[in-house]
Every structure is written in structure tokens, then in C-alpha cells.
Image 1 (cartoon, rainbow, N blue to C red):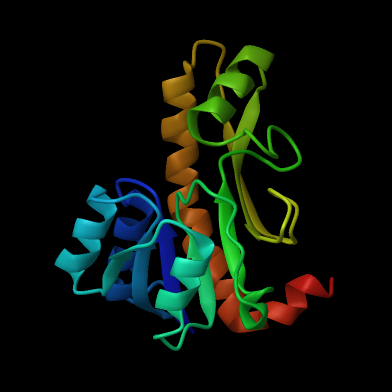
Image 2 (cartoon, rainbow, N blue to C red):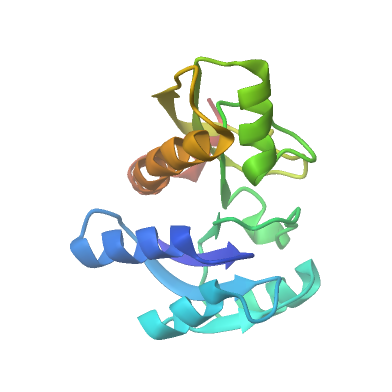
Length: 189
């Protein structure tokens, strides 16, 4: 599948995608990278990798740029806004969340906020969830979840590092599953 990557920051997930596509362990091709934040490192990385890269501040601008490419799948890779795709891509948006949904998810739960909440609650297991995105935060069909064990002395930064390592495995695995089974498989389960 031809993919667009939406990001808001450093592009660590883009690095992971690029490395796995090059190594042949992740299916698909990245057609365009778009950030809602100007001059972020992720856009420079995209250009360095040879991907078209653009800044677009809102959904309408993002969709206008994406319309120039034959995009079949939209990957939210640290994209910190609620994305509203065009109608033909409504079921084709995949997000990753840094917890095991339904824990620590929904509006306001992202990044370190999730890990601080998990730490404060004293959970013994955390992880990540790759899911299709819809118009409600963290509510679309789940594709893959990965667990990580936590210890009592883990800090929120430790939790973030463990979860990001799991994300690096889970997101490519989910993309490969979507390529294998098709988008409708997950929406119709």
C-alpha cells in the first residue's frame, strides 16, 4: 500500500518505518510526509530519506497536499492533533497509542502524560496499541497490542522507553497485517 505519514515532532517513528521498509521487514511505500508543526526534525528526516515533505497546519491543508499522491493508508506517527481524513480514506487511518487501550486513552492522553498516569497508578504492565483511527480519540478497531512489564522502580521516562521499544515492533507488524488481511477485515470484526 502507498502510505502518507503524519507527524508533529522528531520523526522517531518515521526512522523506524524507513529502516524497516529498506530492510524489507515492513510492506508498503511512503509517498509523502506531512507535519502540522513547522520546521520539526521529522520533516528534515523525511527530506533526507528522499520523501516529499510538507508543513500543513490544518486538516484541509493536509488533505489538499495528500490529494497530490496516490495514498491508500494514512499513518499517524506522533501526530498530536485529531485528524479528519477525506471521505475515501475515512477507514484508512492508523494510529499508535502509548498504552493498552482502553487504559489511559482518550482526549488529553498522549506522550508522557500517558506514562506519568501509568506510573502514578502503579500499573505492572503497560504497552502500546496500534488501531484504526476514527473521529473519537483512541476508539477505532484495534490491530495490534504489545505489552511491557514494569517494575516498581521504573520512572515515567523508563516506562516511555520500554513502550517506545514495543511501538517500534507493533506499528510495522500492524501495517503488515493490514496489507495481508485488508482494511475491511478489522472494521468488520
